[in-house]
Image 1: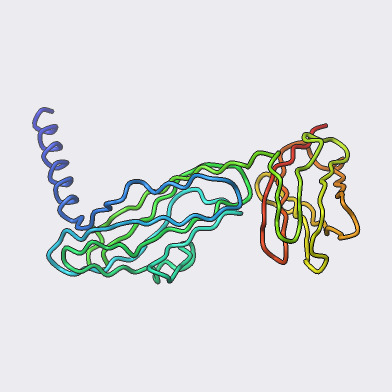
Image 2: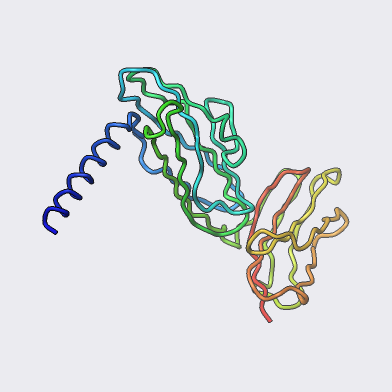
Length: 238
């Protein structure tokens, strides 16, 4: 038994050493963190260093983690961005001997729900699959305070009240540009579309009938000429 344990220990140490020797790229950046409000996009830099004495090419093999249906993530090499869920083979990084690489960015859109999670990006050497490096990411998304009022060039837009609501919720607004196309999207907590409402320049209050909504948390997003302006939270109770 003693001999077996000794042999196992030796094998484990050799495996660890061989793995360490195979890894030739260091991620100099700390864990990539995205913290902020819903409906927000952030871009963070990731710095790599090639510790080997030869040029190497690395490709994204897979992404592991929790990316919600309303969230979006892009891997950018300079100004060219790719979707890691679709464009694995296109996300390829060339590193010269000893090079410090600074043109790698992660762009993260927070989506329309409060949530938090992690993700990992796994890169490997195209000629040596044991030569890998991993970029770790973490995110925490929260809703803005409901008392915040939006003063957009085309509309002044308040917050829903009463909140929580069980029958009729309403939002006060004033459209400054009658030619703007303005609507409100209501989504469930997990991002499923519930209702789409058009805001009229002739009105100053939008009424939302929530009596048929299931109790829970919803998010409403103001959209002006196809652009998301703000997302806020609506709570429905019975």
